[in-house]
Image (cartoon, rainbow, N blue to C red; front, side, top):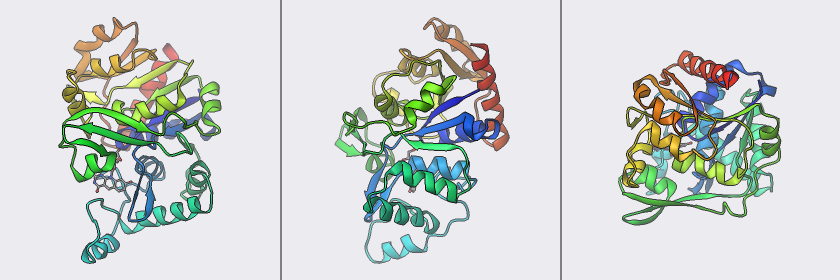
Length: 304
Ligand code: FO1
């Protein structure tokens, strides 16, 4: 079965990792959000791309989900000592990624070319693609004005109340070579359990049309997210945070929707959206959970 998965940060990377345990490299392509990218300390940083790559490469910090395992923090500690910004925690191994990516971008290489080379260097055989080679920047409109994504997410720890989102540059952003083909050749597209507002919507706005079966896994369980501000965003936008709210968010493109056992009472409401449903354990604390959920979703797709 050929799958194209759409993923953002930590939650999306976990399911992508589970799918990569089951599907061969030629059966799985992962398209990753780049709306969180930003320039910081003169470095071009791609948090979601790095989180997906590190996760599939077995290099990710298991506690945070982002950054590298067995990391050291000498560089950022010395930046701070010199009076530089240390709020965005860049580890020493992670900084090598940003230095080399920034160098290559300045030489004119594309983000997708760089990602291909980095995946090879990290021993990752599956195809990981940025959603676009041209920059897209998520801007978060809040009760304190419009904030750049990482300013909102990390520096302000998602405290400001969100009023809306803008994806600067998405109008002119073309999806990268290979992304359209990956979707055309796929038997189905899986929307991983990432934040619908700021991790998945930017990808959907770049890809535009998906005329394939689409299955989404809810990032919200029992009205809450495992990690990140998706539930808080729904609430601040006046929408009751729930798996049903996520299904409604994607309703125009959804074929199937995966809810956690905790939300089995919502299954009929989701079915009433003319969407097929799978209720299962969607919590992914260990690699075995990621692989099991991936198996459940692939089996569900086979039954659609
Ligand atoms: N998230 C944080 O909450 N605090 C950080 O200091 C932080 C640093 C960081 C460094 C590299 C990287 O790739 C990701 C990092 N993240 C951090 C996570 C990042 O902000 C989010 O993963 C995405 O932007 C949203 O999924």
